[in-house]
Length: 488
Image 1 (tube, rainbow, N blue to C red):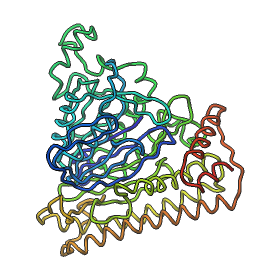
Image 2: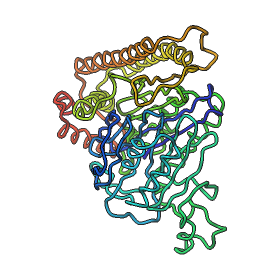
Image 3: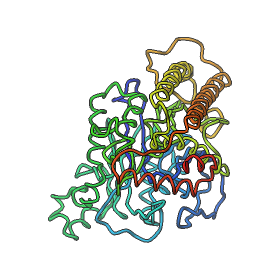
Image 4: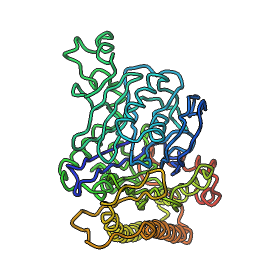
């Protein structure tokens, strides 16, 4: 279960495109932050995706991937051209095919091979036709579904929804939200050539004039129990209310939102209806990672949690440039896993009520985020002053990114040199990571010193669910300290 949103420049405060997603998956499934480099592969090469081998492109682009630890593909991410994609599980009447490309594989392939949202849409649909989609997407238990995608670049955005090899697509004009349900009706802009005929032939609608993609192709029971109607409505409502004022802060607040019946009880009660999803029932997932992006033609700024549970996590600014201290490289998956697990230790301690004062942690986290936002304005001012200069080649080390400040905040000073601008960005990323690490270390030390017995609150089902999850993670996790704490 997931939620992805986009707001085009006509709906944001400063004319940028705002994009964000929460990845909701099984709670013990680590979501790694991996940055893959641009690479030449040569002709005739093959690529092993999660389940199948396909033809490799002769060159792939640099990409930031937020990916489940066990699969090749990614839940969400961006590339050097500012292309951003998030995918969602959707439940359709089309039968599941054999193991082929997962939706997450399709997402990564598009990021590595495309420069614009329309190119990504065309690639994904061509791969669907060539290879199909299918295979287990679950971590500790089987889970099968089809996929929808929200695809955005600094100038445009598309929503693409699929059912097996069939699909419909719609260009985003202002704001759009996808959750775990088909949302396109009869107002699509592009579609599979046999989309309507297939529905009529199978008796899902009486005639072409009555065709509605979501109504014809949705598996209604699965869709209902996904909680997606509530989540999509909530996000859509906020974006409508904030239209013209939407910023990264808006996106961040949305990603931390809980259902009104869950707010304040999110560590005692599961909720499929919360954007910041908390597991704890027979069905449902947990938000294992979150990110938001501000996209402009000459600069893209990202906010990453690097861990689960956005209402606990600290969002850190990120730019895809040079050496960075936040994302890990291919071959560093073990370090990326430890990074995620360290943040997960805090979440599990809060669940077990072993943190003496959660409010103390949250106050300090908010203080750090306020300071990061203040410093981010300075970086944006520098970026805005360089916006009149020719854009650097995205494949070079001279690509720079933007922030949340509005044009009114810019100061008419001389543009900084590329080296000075890169130094500003590197220093802010380093400060954010150091501040987070210090806060985590202090908080985890307080938990250890307090020595409180772990006691999960909530219903018997909720308590039993998380006790089992914690035991499973302790048995399989490579972090020995984490293992010891969970077994207390």
